[in-house]
Length: 183
Image 1 (cartoon, helix red, strand yellow):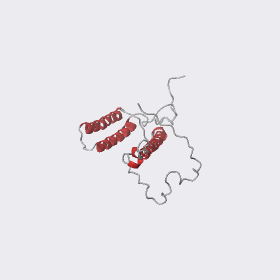
Image 2: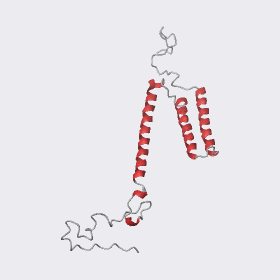
Image 3: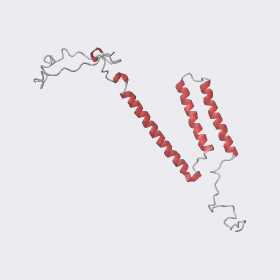
């Protein structure tokens, strides 16, 4: 085998379409692109650091939103300048994979936040039944007292057990054991 490579007229123009591992410029970065990405990353890190340490905004929620915005921009900078993700590299499959991953993350995060919100809403301490307190006095924190049943229509016959149907032969019920006393 010879060390020289004979070019045919199709290759004479400098085209290397023979699939021997040559890559396009979209696959590799230059020193200039790496330095540009590094400088942008440093700036996008320094500004949020200054915003937080200098307490530029009075409201911490505003600071958090601005820092999240800078974080999103920095993610894009890293993907473009360091991971070389664009529509030309790998036939666009890397961008398609990124879009798919983003959709999955958004679905999982929004679903988790939705579930946690509804769990918090439905399981609030003021909404739980207090089995140790007396509900008629309103001992549940934040819960209103239950209205008295006296004077309600149809309640006159409900004195004791005589007004309950099907309880006629239940006069010999055994006594419930007493709860153990706390030491």
